[in-house]
Image (tube, rainbow, N blue to C red):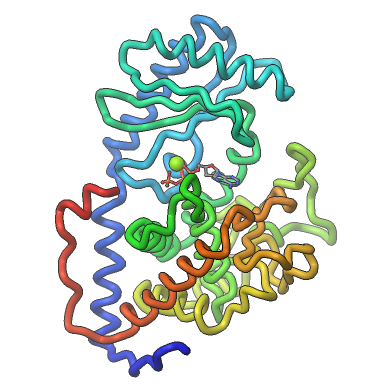
Length: 344
Ligand code: 3AT
Ligand code: MG
């Protein structure tokens, strides 16, 4: 029941390219803002060490993966020096006492421990910058998936731009907030990366499938193999398809919307960035869900698991509308209103 799309003229590809580039320049933080985040982190670490000697704080998520917005939250992971892991009871206790400590920090407000979530956190609001943030403990896999996403972002400028466009699209269509029953930014980023790996010729490789010798190296974290090829300087000689794809971001963006509405069979296939070969919902025994996105490291984790049927339909409709809007030539898209910009 998809509308047929008219042929895409070179002029319209130009418009699409401009819209995509604009998304990136409007929303990407500059170096100053990156510095501010590091500064807040340092200050928090010093403060937390008053009570937790040997505490080490690290930024992850979009502050580090290359797809951050000016107003993105601060995702912080805390570990204690000399301690490898933590059990659930200790974790909740530390989160609660961390919350009590942070309440004494003059620069923070709205301290809220959340101990019932799968990953317990303390939420906070940083008054001077207006940034929100949360601290989790031993969220080691998240540090690794952040590094994986950052590596993909560093391979090709188009990766970065498309991930921004996707995040803006998701926020604008109201389909990008996992805490309200839709999908997280992380999930949408995985969808973009998967599309870029499946494109012919591919824009990016499958970094988890590049290694020396016959067997994939094993780097175990929480029982999962987090190995991936991260020597990006060596990539051109290790990946024969390097820079073979010469499409523009505009073509790729429309290509992505068409891929997820025309080609990809959600009922049967899994969005899976750790292997190039097809993975089916049947393989994973995840047939009861319509949107299935496998975490690249925690293979038991389906990022679409929390979606209701209604939300799934809502997300699919956003993609179908997106395909029509971005696939129908007009002279130019109207500029965004400042009030819409502030939304991010
Ligand atoms: P925003 O710019 O904040 O929207 P983000 O990439 O920082 O994008 P989140 O703040 O939602 O996304 O998440 C922070 C990081 O936590 C991103 C990823 O490393 C990890 N993460 C988030 N959701 C999941 C998930 N469902 N499974 C595994 N890791 C996750
Ligand atoms: Mg974040």
